Length: 106
Image (cartoon, rainbow, N blue to C red):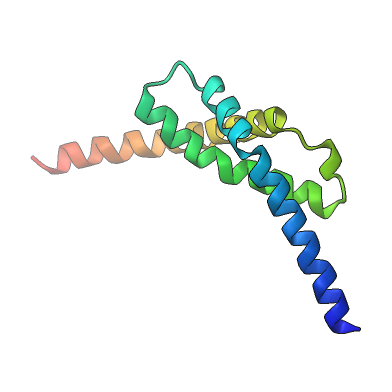
């Protein structure tokens, strides 16, 4: 009985992984389109940060049994929005750190 439950859980895990892998190229394209105004290297870095966030949203939907309503573009846009929010929170710290490093080097 326990082995049967593990098999079912493992099969479910593989299902959400396969579905996310199928959506991954479209998620990447949508994230790149949302960040098109940035320089190439910045865009690629933020897309790389957005993909795990899209995966987290997708996993949350899968746990609720709502994989059917998950579409690549909304996942990507939600992930990009979260990454931009992270950048806004990190920016003041990065500026302060750069300022302090500049003045302590003298």
